[in-house]
Image (cartoon, rainbow, N blue to C red; front, side, top):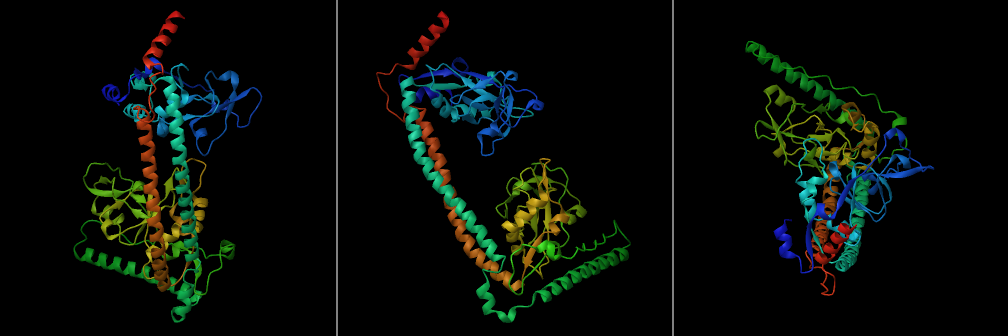
Length: 505
């Protein structure tokens, strides 16, 4: 917000001052990590870090004589770096580290709660976001010194804070109810998937279609035979390509011979111990038995320049679907295009990420995605269509049973969690006939579409709640949230008195 805009919206009695004239922003201090402790100890003080103001704090303690910057609970802190840049926090006391900065001001001029809310608005945040850094986001004190802040009379600040917190309390109660409903939907969704892949959703269908069922051992033998037939078909197709190539005088490279499909070790009783009992006609097997060998994506560098072929990346995998926005591009030769080509029914799965919850997320390839290729942090799964529906696998991958297996295999202490193609092939899954898979798909589609509609409504209401929160703050800092009292000492008079006291001191 610029000076002209602030001047035109604030009431009489308010003042506009540059941040550097009325606030001191003081960076933190910390000793080397070798001096950190993670339990309270005599002579040590809590070292506050930005993560301590979130859901997963890591209490850290340092020698009190090795830090020089301290804060009280009522002090306001600003996150200085990285993804948390500009986050405004308060409510904890101790020492604070170099990734935080404390806001210091005259207690006569600013109420700390007023500052806490003011610094969260675009008045401060927009200027902060405009600061450019070549390596890591951050800011220096002089870069925010010119930000212009609205200063109401001190008593009006108290009234503004009281009204904000009254309205936010009501708003937070509504948001809490929405998030509770959101969590309940998530629980119900997982319960639905659990019942689907334990055969409970289709119990009535099996009773009505007993003639279509086959014993589990027959199903497994048929899967094995289809797998062998698929390998033989690939070899025959390759030999035909070679014959054509030789007849044409062997131009270019010889067609690549298909690799033998990986032979997986038999599933043992120990591996399925503790798994839910399946109904007649169902069986457990390894995911690799019903898909072609997984294929890693390209490692070629891609850019946003709209040239070449679009390459799908991790950001394009969202909520079980492919979102082709935010594509990158690269040029590929015919052999590369063949290697990384996609077909309808393929599944792209995220194999590597810093967040364990992202690893294993997947999306189904539709006809409109076939002209894309895919990047190296993704793995392509190609289900054997005569054995399994692609939708069956894709929904199975989002169930708790598979998520737990994926997270166990992928979890790492290195900061990057990764699941490889062999580990994906070894995932243990339930399987049934194609007919029952189709019935499962129809039941899930019907029920999940209702859940999706409810969740969309919840998300829209959460967005409206956030918009209302911003509207409240905008009114607050333009003088429209509470009425003005002509008996309040104008901020300009207060500023002059403070300046005079400083001169006298």
